[in-house]
Image 1 (cartoon, rainbow, N blue to C red):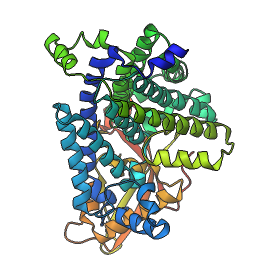
Image 2: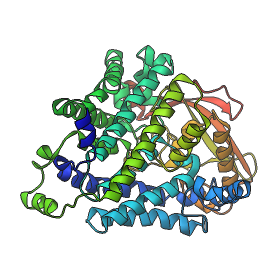
Image 3: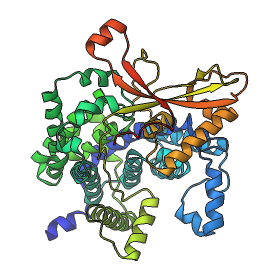
Length: 484
């Protein structure tokens, strides 16, 4: 045990090539994440967007004073304009390109982490997803790969992957959702997930016995396989193979932006240079090894401090979520601050499943009699429109529409903001949509109709050409609650 502990602070020479390849591929995921945000950020968090970030900063400073600067870490305190927000997103994309081509690696990694953390806070609920915190912690740890990796950073990547996979499984059980306990989650998942694509339709047609088998496979890969991560090499390779297979299966059936690609990337550290060297040219391998440098004492010290925060925050959060027991105030405050800086989070992907799909159609009118519909880019709308594939892009507004009818006051607030911005004719918000029927001036009236959507059967699709059927439920919000 003592030898293993000491090994954490020694160079992990068997991961030098793996770390080099990991950073290159992380640059591509960072680029996708930043560019995806760049084309949306004004409509989400700009002054004329749905949740203007400058208002939050002003209110936070009024409430907390200078404490707000470090409790809400971001680069927009002096300027949260559209130009600044877009500049941060495009700047992150440029840094990702530089990183991919091996330029200013340390500066690029630090810069991208700072910029994504800033955009994470700026976008509020629109960027408050677990793949965003997964990318933040992945990017933060990558800063310590700018030189030779140590055993500690490899362990922290293993711990990150373990948390994402195992916690997702354990919270499915903890939720008590009958869809998971009854093995029926996949009976509706492909149809009711936030943004299906064509593959979702085809998998929805599978026999129930196969769908139940898929639920069992999910539990096995989330509750058992993650423990292989900490076992000898043979088990780690098995964990990598199974995890990668599951992520490819999810990509084939679901639109989940870059998260599945990121999980596949994290599986690289379940491999090692003995495998990676098989795919890299010999000359490139030698060049990487020749230019590798050992981690300095300051880097090891900062990584050790970060490891304490990550382990403390993630374990405490997990303990609290499972037991519901209170924790000491100092520990709770430490966890909250740590998580504000993008590390030490817990993960719980789809702990409960939707069993029906309610879709809202927003309409406007000049006279209250003739109504025209706004059309979203990715969420289900026209029945004959094929569900599009959008990986690795995440259309944040389309995704958030899945949470309406709302189950929280925050969801209700931003949706009312959306209706307000449409009534005002905000160009930044309208750019988030595929079609605005009111090109000359915004409508005088706005209404929202609610429908229940279902995938067509193979027979219905063959006869009508439609991907969806729908049933009118009424005028929102005067409709029955969504289940669950």
